[in-house]
Length: 517
Image (cartoon, rainbow, N blue to C red; front, top):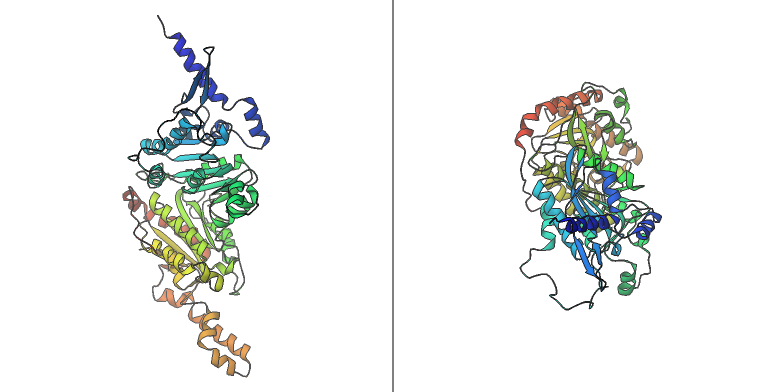
């Protein structure tokens, strides 16, 4: 006697699971410009590498005629590989109940974080769903209501996984409620521009509770969340989201007990870019593009920017020098002269904490005029967010290198200098308590007002004080490790990368963050 019948039933259930919500539901998903969860996994992972956990999970109902109807779990979870490196990958199946979890789907969604921690691999979530639903309330036989009181909090594993392995989430359709919380509980998040919305609650709930009649896009589209930091990056389509996920994970180790992968590069460490000599204008108040400097110094085609749409005076991202993965910070003087806003401070702090967690060295390119000022900055609690960022830097445990490109003023400048950091300065560097223009306006306002030519006197004072902020006397006083020709920046940082290798070997395992304001 064989088990052919049972084997056939297993095969039938697996086939039903791969059919998801059926041909019509899959077609409707495609008509909305969105892939199914299984297509997303196939688009991200190496070919044939996905191994599903719980492919037979779901519910079976027996009809009076004895036929069995199987409904699969509407959450897909398993292990796969990206460029030969193992990951855990999971996501809602929107073709079944709009991604709102059925019983088996809920269990598989909770399991995803445990899976990543168990096998010590990065976690990738593809999110598209509305969390819980009241649609089934009161139907079916009475039974236990709610989770057992002794259950671990459902969010515990979602929080714990963030301290163990890289976590990436992509919003690729409407994401509301609990899935929206999962989205932001990530080290890197991305959403598609036209097909995704992220909502605490949808339009119907908002209208009922608050009277605002807004559609999903107005409530939580990319135009909203690409500017407020709910998501890090916004992309045009799902293929671009897959590419960003691969790139982000390529800079990171699989878990906190491993080192980030250093790769071979044919970009010479001694490369000197002539354009760096003219990158910063001699006129103090003239803007320039910091990203041109970053790309000229880092390994070619190796800058992956994170959060370009919010906190725009601060630049954060990942890059490499001599193949070594790095966290990269900078200022963009084209937005508030590069001043640190509350959003910019939170963005910088997040990048520093990710670098500490995964033991990435940090390189900071400084053009910092200080914290943003004015009534909007005060209302946004900029000093609190900024001080928390400074505290994160002061307690950082990874190697730091700082290149003072231009301005370095005020308390906010402290967010660019890590403990025992290697400090280089360009001849365009200006360092002081505050920018010359503001300092002169405060300290000499009476003298300027009494002058025969106030504007001329103001300029005279500003020029005199600007000379005192020059990098040369500070270099003579050994306030920097070196004052360098801008064209020497890449060779100097490549040397530093080699110097820190022994220290990086000791930086594995968990880190602890204390209280920060």
